[in-house]
Image (cartoon, each protein chain N blue to C red):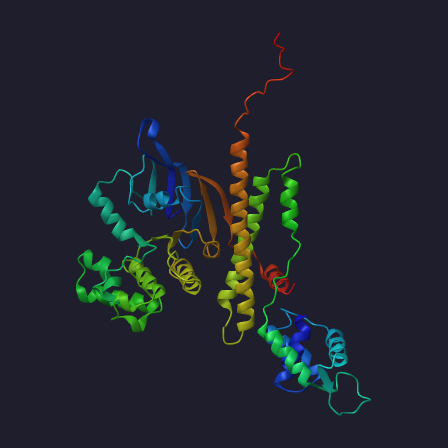
Length: 245
Length: 194
């Protein structure tokens, strides 16, 4: 069974003649351990899709289910709770709290959920270590590079053990090298830690890390490309050899 | 050109036997799988470099084949190498099969340029995915040359993908323009006013 199931997902802003259809009956299915990239030109609806999948906005029509639980029709408090338990978010501008250190930032979702500070910080520190920042635990965001801040954000997204991680242009603010590190880390979130990862990006090199790319245009899916399993060892060897031409 | 200048560069580190230059070159670029240069090419290049006075053979058994002789740089060879390092290298242009395919698709019957573009996009992304996996597994301590080359290839593919987006946008624009019906032009001679 799919971890994420979106059916007939539609979002219309405004009404009458001024109505804008941001998303037009989109259907999407993502499994646990799958890494999906969503691409498309400006205004194609990719951010709208991500917000609807994350329960940050409500659809005009259609439904979203995460891990078998329907988001649509839930009252605000229940929706917020489901978000906290099941979904982790990673944003383009990290969105870390400047006055908290890395461990506290990572632990934040648990602290907000009422978990005791020492237990929450313990888990925060654990995830910081897993994402490769064990010796930055006490640093504040201003003392971290962009790539390091984004890694703290990813630790924070994982600390409450969500089933799904949503990333909105996670490398948009990073240089080439840091972008690759973050994309490789998101790859581990799917491969090693088994979450479903859905990432909006306009960077082709970053999209290439995914298992599958969904292309949106004018609110609909116009194409889907499977990347994983496309190359076997022989084909890969042939490709590397072609570098010499 | 690359092999010629690589030989100058390798000899600038120390004089070498002909046969050693081949393995030194392969080791430099990341292995035989990346760049397999034939011995004949090495020896022909050495002969030409000698003729140009950039490389010389040190006193060694003249009956021995080229692979046994020891080669070293002349002062002219060193100067040539220094200028090469200081100068930029022009981008090599390559004939592009996809470019030809794209232009044909715009004229051929029964072929939709949009489909051709989508197919190419899929191919490029699959290639990027595989090369990225290879790059992630590469060890920077032992395979730095391979990593550099993979990064270069990945960025070229990225450039091609961005170009595809531009092509698509331009075709979309053209579609939008031709769907506006032009106003009917009056035909025939204007009536004579008498």
